Amino acid sequence: MAKSALLKSSIAKKYWMALTGLFLCLFLAGHLAGNLQLLVPNNALNFNQYALFMTTNPAVKVLSYLTYISILFHAIDGFLLTYQNAKARPIGYAKSNPSANSSFSSRNMALLGTIVLVFIVTHMVNFWAKMHFDKNMPLMTQSIEGQPGMKQDFYVGTQAGQYYPVEQVEIGTHTDEHNHAPKQFKLVKKTELYHAQANVKVADLYKDLYKITLAFFRDAKYGLYFTIGYVLAMFALGFHLWHGFQSAFQSLGLNSPKYTPIIKFIGKAFAVIVPLLFAIIPLYIHFTK
Amino acid sequence: MSTAKNININLKIWRQKNANDKGGIVDYKLDNVSTASSFLEMLDQLNEQLINNKQEPVAFDHDCREGICGMCSLYINGRAHGPETGTTTCQLHMRKFKDGDTIYIEPFRSKAFPVVKDLVVDRSSFDRIQQAGGFVSVNTSGNTIDANATPVPKDDADKAFMAAACIGCGACVATCKNGSAMLFVGAKVSQYALLPQGKVEAAQRVQNMVRQMDEEGFGNCTNTGACEIECPKGISLENIARMNREFLKASL
Image (cartoon, rainbow over all chains, first blue to last red; front, side, top):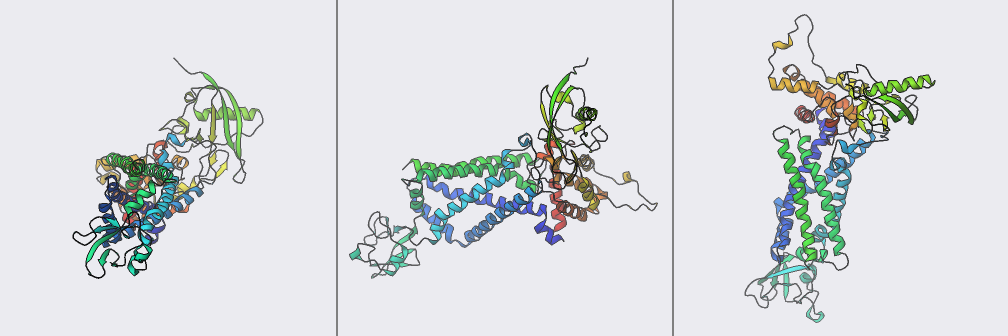
């Protein structure tokens, strides 16, 4: 009985909701720390190196899989709770005054969570999926001092403003006659550029997430809408956290007159500061083009 | 020196012939209601008026009318036990209302509290939760030990007493947007878990009571805190947290 109760019981659902939610709060803090690098002007190299680390480091990979699972579990558990709770009161009240006894956030966690979930999906399509799967992802080249013709940073293809996919460099299909990636370079381990004849490493390559991000929010046609959408999603996240952070501690049974006021204060500070800092970044990018 | 006066009010009351009837809101006008009367006395006055007009009186739950039995209920103007905090409906007085006010009166709504008639709901689901574990097994074969012979820390005794103040009225369920009974069950679990006599059966108690709560069709708590605000006995959310701890301890 004990085992099944830990999965099915109403209290077990609270525990899972709280644990996944708090883990996602940690994720938010980590993600924010990375994003804040976008506020530093001309920080492409640092940001792209960071992005490479975050997508390849084994420890970070474990954390990211935990994050995916947490998001899925948190969302599924949330939808399940909302569905069951709707069934617990088949006939509603003609007149109800919920604002007299509970906060807007606490009553709208499902709605706010759904907005955040939709945002996460679009966000992953726009950035995460490109970083992981897009074969046409632009590459940033960090040249190694002293190698011929590689004095400054440029994108693969050596022609200003032109990008070439990893695969095309690798197999060398594009030749000089097409005015594309020079044939004398070859790609090793997808991140290192070698001079083909001399067989010396001339540059490190980074998927240019920095460029993708800036281009996204500075898009002539949609950049403003993407920025507004991002900021609105951060509002939803803020309200979600306003209730969610302290609620998680209550669900885990951590409620005492001594510590609960402190937890509530930290939760509210977290709910304001984290989404605010997240939202500043696209606003900064969009309005400084 | 009495400040009581008479007011005229409009009532919108849920009327439902029986459990199978669809039911609906019916409008009534009630004049000359003394502001010194209690809310239930106002309903008595309405029923007199209905009986005099050869109409069916409004059925509603009440018993002690002293705020301690937990029998009265009513969702008044969108709030369990009405606009005043820390009181049951019987302790709500008409001086809280103004002349010409429209007052909605509805039964406590929950799948686990089916309407019997009008404003009367069946709260025996609470009894079944109590029966599932809300007790201490005592051998009564003539060697019963005096309860006061077992020392209890003052702090624990106070907390247990505050949890035991729950009168099982169901306002927590009625006001919860999720129709959750966790404040009630949390209070009942806590009042025993805090005392040495109750600790013996603590693990099976919390598991059995929570299982019964889920089986009765109550919703899942999302910590909105509405129950704590509307509870006429001021039962704290700390009791839900304690139940959560007890449940985890018992499940591991």
